[in-house]
Structure formats: C-alpha cells, structure tokens
Image (cartoon, rainbow, N blue to C red; front, side, top):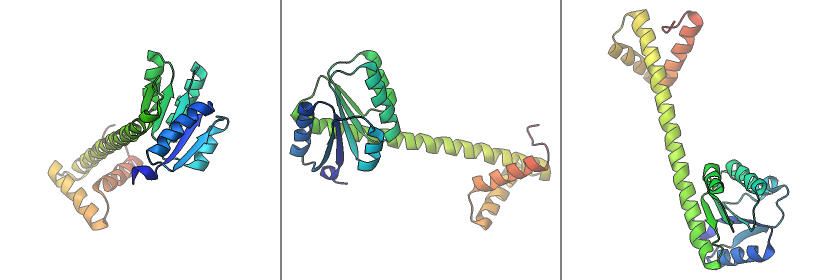
Length: 200
C-alpha cells in the first residue's frame, strides 16, 4: 500500500488546530483526509469512514476525555497518533496500554505531522506483527499439549511407545488430510467421553 493512499481521520474539536494537521497531511501527499470536530457518536463515524489511520488532537484533555479516547483506541485496532498539550506519567502509561501508536506532548506543528503519522503506522504494524506471533506461539504450545495428551492416551490404551503413538497420530492425520493437532483433539475429546482421562 502506498503511504499517500492512506485514509486519514482527524478528530479535533479545535478547528484551527485541525486545519494545521490537515495542512500537514495534505502537504505530505495524503488526499483522503476527513476531519471531525464533534466526538459525539465517534465510534459509529469511524465505522462509517473506515480510516487507515486516526489522528486525535486534544488541546486540554481532562481525565474522562483521555479515558474515552483510550477506550476508543483499544476498540478500533488501527494506528492512532495522539497530540496533547500537556500530560503526566499516568496518562502516558495509559496511552501505551491502550495501544496508541504515537503520543505526542506539546508537539503540534505542521511539519511534524507526516513523520509522526509514519511512525504511528510503523509502530502499529510492528505491534500487530508481535501480537500475531505471540498468538501463533500460544496456539503452537496449546497444540503440543493436546498432542502430548493424545500420545499419552494411545500409549496407555494400546501399549505403544511415545514414538509409535506419535507416528500413529501423524499417519492418521495424513490419511484424513487433517492437522495432527486436530486428530489429537478429536482423540482427547473421545477419550473424555468414553471414560476417565489419563489425568484422572
């Protein structure tokens, strides 16, 4: 995807500050820029607009406003760059926890909009990749546990060695054109239905 093809949503109640951000984006080649000044019903508007990136500018955010924006950033799962005039350590930590990709304190200048937006997209992509890899690792670990339980069931019920039990699982999976973990899960489920499992 070409960077300039990004659909950018700017959320800013202050029209002057919003125009600074919009000018910075357009100067950087972003043609699809939508500016919203009223945060009422913002989640619905985001769903309608479907932006690739969201830029939020909060001139003097209070705790409730920040928390609402952090909840929004958790929900939308898109890169978010947030500009605030002032902040404290708790707000910064909350922004990071909420998944805000770029949290800029007292740094709203037209020439900074593009690099900050680029950084927000890059950080979001890196974080998404890490989250995906973590989920794959968890899934792999879960599959191994199920396969080990299935091997245990086969070893106990058929008197097989661990290697022979695994070979049988693998052969069955190949014959049925399924994953070993799926075959193992079926065996564990069936064993649970037929009687006490090897754990009990």
